[in-house]
Image 1: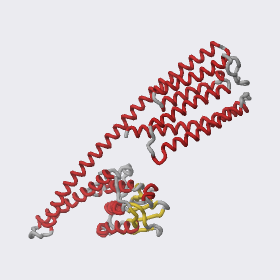
Image 2: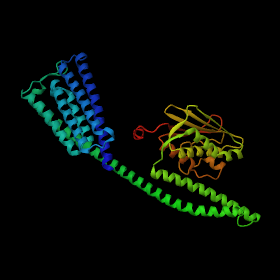
Image 3: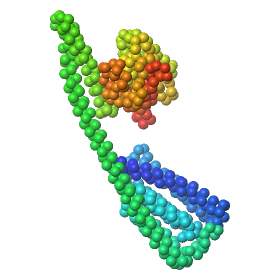
Length: 451
């Protein structure tokens, strides 16, 4: 896992280097044009533009090479990606040296751009490879300057920009090479040191993240086993209480009936809580859903029927608006129906008597939006971002109704996110709140190919 994370990071860096080269190519063209047309510096324009073209073609080829290594979510070899980056930086140094040779050599202040290459090399490569690149850069620049100094190759002066003859001054040439070399190696040392510290921190964060995930998995497994056992015992208690409460084992006096009935109701609430916790834990542990096409319209009606008794008792008016084009979508019908029912139960619980709940289902093209609006107590200020957390209940919700698990909205969020959708809540302008969830209509493309 750690190797894969590092490889993926390296691929991103390789693409980053390609993007930087596009900027460098554009900068070269602009700099050559500006120096020639505005500053009236005499330059071998065709040759410099030719190298800009070479950079463009070479960058396209490198981009295609990286795409080949990562095509179809392949896991590229770390060594292969590292070689590509090393090749890019080395070739960039050669091209920069050639451009400097055509535009003044040691008299061109753009030789400082070697420093940028060393910074990039120190970020992308190991410390040893960075020092090797610095050595290669010193060799290339030193070779260029010395060959011009001894007259082995021609010097192309920057006429109209800088005084000529510096390349013939031995003290200037050797002094510049010395300072240039010291600067590059110092830059590599400082940048690679910082990069190594950051890499160590990143590795420790990734390791800590893996450990947290493992601890969360163990916690979920423990909760799953524990709640499963509790549910079994609780089911037996509820069953016995149900028999006594229904007087199947004999009549009860008023006090006995009251105590048994209260115990039965509490057991039922505990059972609902344990069942919700089991569903949420299983969903987090497995992450697998039995997906397929189903009628969303039918699921909406089923969810509304599930809350019918509660809304009738409180005289809450429930209405719906479903776009005619909404029919089948792809997903796990039972879980989506459960998520919608949770939103409806939540609305019914916190809507006063004689209130109203409106369910709207809108066709958004590739997605559908389901809105559950109510005339209830709304959401307390500051609680909007937290109400979907496990076991969390808004302040005004706790004041309105003491009972509640704080799991219904969390389960709804888990279901929607597992389907690649979105869910959120907001207060209405006048009264109450609206819970919205957006679900994709179709399976992801990779799943469609397997169907």
